[in-house]
Amino acid sequence: MTDPATLAGLDPTTLGDLLRVAGDPGFDRWQDQIRRTGGCSDPIHLTGSTKTLDPATGTVLHTYTTDKEPGGRLRLACGNRRASRCPSCAWTYAGDTYHLIRAGLTGDPAKNTPETVRDHPRVFATLTAPSFGPVHNRPTSGRCRCGTHHPDGAPELGTALNPDTYDYAGAVLWNNHAGHLWRYVTIYLPRELAKRAGISQRALKERLRVSYGKVAEYQKRGAIHFHAVIRFDGPDGPDTEPPAWATLDLLTDALRAAAARAEVALPPTGDQPARVLCWGTQLDVQPIGAFGNGEDLTEQAVASYVAKYATKAAEATGTVDRRIGELAELDKLPDLPDHTRRLIRACWDLDELYLDRRLWQWAHMLGFRGHFSTKSRRYSTTLGALRQVRADYRAAQQRTALMVYLGAYGPLRPEEQAELRRRDVNTDTMVLRVRQAAPELTTGRRALGDTKSDAGRRRLALPAFLHTDLQRHLDWYAEEGDEGLLFVGEKGAPFRRSSFGRKWRRARAAVGLPEDFRFYDLRHTGHTLTTRSGATLKDTMVRAGQSSEKAALFYQHSNLDRQKEVASGLDAMVRAARQKPEAGPDQDRSGT
Image 1: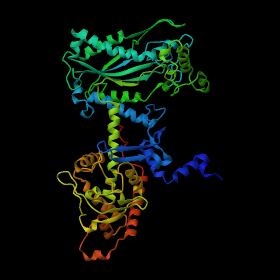
Image 2: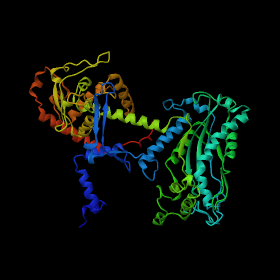
Image 3: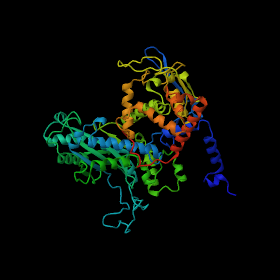
Image 4: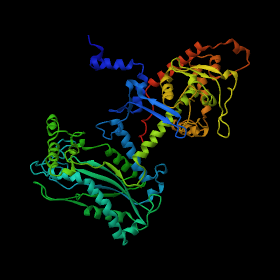
């Protein structure tokens, strides 16, 4: 008889671990952490605690410790850009790169780039390495030099026709200095522009600025090359127009001249001759057109192309995606292609001759030690800014998520939520007590007082699915002490209707709710959901804190036990809905 582990495609040990984790009391929180990391393949595990103090008074505003987390650890996404290491984080990185490049092409005021940059001259340039010897390829003529018509994706593509004569040393040295070659291009380009414009370099800076964003890519032969979006701006950056004489032809001509001038001279050392490293002859420069204007190379295509290669590294050549300790480690990689193995061996052989270049430390990158994605200061926004916007959005979303839940599944009035304290919440029984209300005055201050009616003072049994969100909110966002407010703003003050309103409107638009749907309307949603769970009219009135003089309602009773039954029904309904697969198109790329 086949055991359950075999049927599930797991070994018994793995199945046992799976059942143990699923049955753990902290499973919901563990699952929440995995969701927050986006399914990261190799999350970072943090342990410890934090304490937030009021700088003026020294009062403890908030404390957090990982002791209450599953396994005593907080899991964060690794953020690795390599798709071979972490597909999830690489997908996020590609999305950020896409938005960064696209903002510099189409303009995006939210990303420090006006929409007028679409009218600035800009090109998409590809700078490649020179030849280090003939390799197997698929020329347009049909046949390789070896006489074979290689199919697409053939493993021999990019490998040397004659490994004994191929310049492996030159290939890894060129990769190692490719970043310097690009730096020289950025130095010589303004000089070439000034010379062609007939003005000094100082005068050029007062009239024109060159902005760029670039990404590196490996060819099958193991040589790095760069794709760059290069744009003309006015002297103050993308907010100003470039002069009329700054044309596409001028940019193209000056770029070719700058690339031809860029070179790095290496003196002879050991058995290695003197070398002059330079760009290859295949410099491709194409103008970028606005989407829909009929051009072959559009803004959308360029941004997508650059983002595609932002998550790639040397693994396209068959090499490893992490540093190599000793040369003997290569013996443990039988599937490593011979061409790649020779490039790595060249890094080992040359390391002692070029100690300052740290070739062996970068052998897994075939010698390349530069950044895969770089940009000039004023091209557009930064990856760090995009990450911060996403982090701020998620933090605000998490800080206010419980308010939305309580507004619907309570359903609580905004002024009732404003006066909830820590001592009003019992996470063991999932019962919440409403004692007072604090409506916001026109001055922005809260006026503490009684609830709207006597019925407003009540105890509510919350659905069990809210336990994780409730506990997390208490751990992360609520004020300290029994009298600490449950809901406060980012700076520790009682939340304001104006600031919360901005978050509410953004969230409302994101999920497609109509513009006239107010936060207070969640109470209507709560009434509907409570009724659907099987609650009586009296039950819904008690949960909502409403009163009525109609005599018939006095004969319908709703005690705390009944409230727990209603909460259980809500819990079952929401859990069933969450288990259904999401409908609709795939979510958009990450980025903001």
